[in-house]
Each structure stands twice: as structure tokens, then as C-alpha cells.
Length: 161
Length: 161
DNA sequence: GCGGGTTTGTTACAGTGTATCACCGCCGCC
DNA sequence: GGCGGCGGTGATACACTGTAACAAACCCGC
Image 1 (cartoon, rainbow over the protein chains, first blue to last red):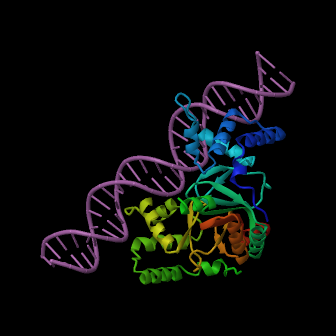
Image 2 (cartoon, each protein chain N blue to C red):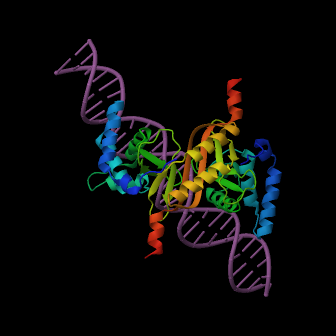
Image 3 (cartoon, helix red, strand yellow):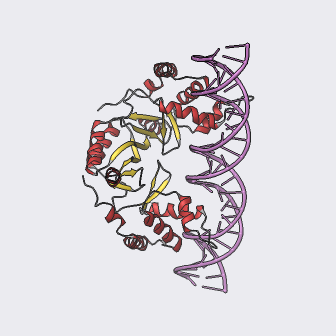
């Protein structure tokens, strides 16, 4: 089991993220278009959960409107490439913090006060879940594990104002 | 770790469920009104995931329309009492199969072909998750764990037609 | 240049959930 | 009996989330 390097590392890079996206697309023969880049930039820049309509609004400017449907299409693409995650309990999207195995059991830690989402993983959880499903005679196709609560940073901030 | 008794037992009882609901409400000094009863009946009777609008339609009849907003209010109430669960990945609702500790880490097993939702639990998963959160410095308020896939019954049916 | 695939823009619409206000029924109180 | 409060319901309207369908633009290889 391991845990990743923290938000600073995640946030380290709009640049890193874009570089990763470009690499992924080149490698797979897919187009990393301006719209897809802008949507990814918006998701990474904010770093918190935000809805597709928030992103659309953020990308829109007087004279240049980005329709939600375009954002959805870009997000679908980015999710297929594993660059963005969808948070089901919030109908919202976040950047993928780092490369993890495509089907890996990611645990999303959603802070309800600051909206930052951390990613964790645990072989213990994953193994236990696999055994539980097997015992239940259930064949999984995919699973989501989202935890809402307070992140350490917010707790510290609230306690020492 | 344990697993519950299977769908037959869950389904055993619209009657059991209603009795439980009445008991819960009486005990807590809350009203188990006709509307709330009807909504709970509809959720239990179908047994599969269904949206609030499905329930509203099911309860409506020529001359007696039940508005979705009323269904939502009843569902909110029933969820607060732990009689109904919400499946975030489907925007849908199911009856709570049985009494589990209010905050317990329930695992939802959602069959994508028949729509039946089984509930499981695992101390291994729960313990591992707790340790992972602690290590991440994250204080959970609540979590959801939903797995989509094929239940044993559907797999058997499909393999031996 | 041309044909065929992919991407984007645009409009419209379906599905999900909430806010607001009025009304009703009930209960306790004067 | 009358009055006021309170929770529940009905009804309308609206906000938010997501998708369908079609046309136009773009790119790329031929």
C-alpha cells in the first residue's frame, strides 16, 4: 500500500500535466486539440471539484462562448485517456493526480470545506474488496470509492485561526 | 466480515420493511404518513435501482398525480431514517436490505444487467480504509463504495440459456 | 483538389434535483 | 369554540446535469 506525495506534488504542474497529456495523445495517435487543452488546463488550474458548467463558464469570455456540451465532450475524452476523474457523488471533475494503473482502485478523499480531492490507494482495501466480491459471486466491471470529510490542512487551519 | 442472506431474504418482505418503518418512526416520534408508506412500498416492491421520477410515475394514476418533488421529500425522510439508500453512480434509490449500523461501511453491488443491488460489508475493507484515511490525515464524515458488474444469478442465466 | 474521418458549434431536449409559496390537518392552548 | 403554530403535502417554477442530432469546419492521406 502506498500513498502519493501530497497536493503540492499534484499541483506541481499544470505544465507537467499538459506534457503528460501531450505524450499520451502522441503515443496513442490521438489529437490534443486546443479545446481539450483548455479544458484540461481549467480542471488542473482550479484543482478542486468543479462541475462541467463551471468549467464552461470559466472558459467563456465576452465574445467567445464555450458551450457545456463541448466541455462534456472534452471531459469524456480526457477521462478515457485517464487524465481526469469524475466524482460521482458531486457530479464534478478533477485532474488525475498521477499515473496509476488504469483499472486500479483509487480512493478519492474529498474535503468538504476546501473542495480539494486527494487520491489514495490501499492494497488492503483492494484485496478485501476483491475477496468480498468473490464470496458474493459478483463479477465487478468497475467500482467507485469516495470519502467525504475534512482534509488535514483544513482541520489545522480551523483549529488555529 | 459477513455477508447477508441473499436477495430472497431482502425481498422477503414488503411487509417486514413496512413493519420496520413503523417501528422506527414510532420509536423516534416521527410520522409514517401514507405518502411515505407508498414511496417505501414502491421502492421495496421493485427491488431494483429506480430514479425518483420512476417512483413518481409508478405512484401516479389517472386522476392522482404524485409530483417528483413529493417523492424526493419522502425519499429524504426515508434515507434519514436509514430505510432507503441512494446509489450515487446511478442517481437512484433502493431499499435498505437490513439493519446495519447507521454509519457502517456498506458495499453496494449493482448488477448492470438485472439492476438488483446487493449489500455487502467487510471488516477487512473497512479497517483498511480507516487506516488509509488516518495515514492521509483525513477525517471522514461519510463514504460511498459502489461496485458495478454482474451478479451470480445473471451470469448463470446467461451461460446456460 | 477530393473523400472520409474526427472535432467543434449550435440547438434542442431529457433527466435530476431544489426553492418557494400556499394550503391542509392536527394538536395544544387560551 | 377560536386561534396559532407546526409539520406535511401540492403545485409551480426553476436550476443544474447530461445527451441527441445535425451542420459546419478541420485535418490528413491520396
